[in-house]
Image (tube, rainbow, N blue to C red):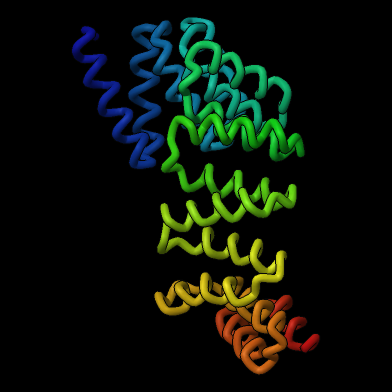
Amino acid sequence: MSKFIIKQAFAEAIDLQQRNQFDEAKQIYKKILSINDNEANAHHLISLIYLVEKDHTLARKHIEKAIEIAPNTAIFQSNYGGFLYSIGEIQKAIKALKSSLKLDKKLFQSHYSLGVIYSDIKEYEKAIEAYSSALNLNNESAEAHNNIANLYNTMSDNENARLHYKKTIDLSPTEVYPRFNMSNFLIKIGNFKEAITILDELVQNNTATKEVFNNLGIAYKGLEDNENAKKMFEEALKIDNKFDLARKNIENL
């Protein structure tokens, strides 16, 4: 297989992989590797498919082979860190991600992944540092703003929590999760009117979930408006009549 044909094969396999046609993509990667087992990126890309398929044995085999062939490729180390985290090998994951950043300090996904891991193990200051580094590289990442806002909320840094929740909404104005998360924050600090304003946008756009209506009910209850609180809890139950949290909230009015 000539270099030109291999390049074509990679392009086809990557396209299939992006469209979640994993079996077809794997067949092409396996064909490439049968001709040249030192094609590091083929090992790397097929490992990502095995990770999605939760075949951790083959995912590990191929990503480690890719690193063996090309140890100075940052994205391989980064995705290895993501794999290790997915199987619970936390410290090894952190080491791999840090290795990737030694190779490429501007690799957004490694900073972001470190933020996720440090949050998970409750090392919040390190998580904030990691997400801040990620945002320095891409300040348009709604997910990073949301995650760092959640951290600031956990740490009762209300000013920074508000700042990043607001940025998340600005970046994803029609999505549910930014407004829902900010409403949790606002309810926590007793700013019930603003929570209602934030969530009403979702009601007006017909995208409100049962959780959104439940939070609206909690906010109205915080304002001692039990009539509207009950209406919101009932709206939540219309979406899911087995939503026990809303039912209990009605009982507690």
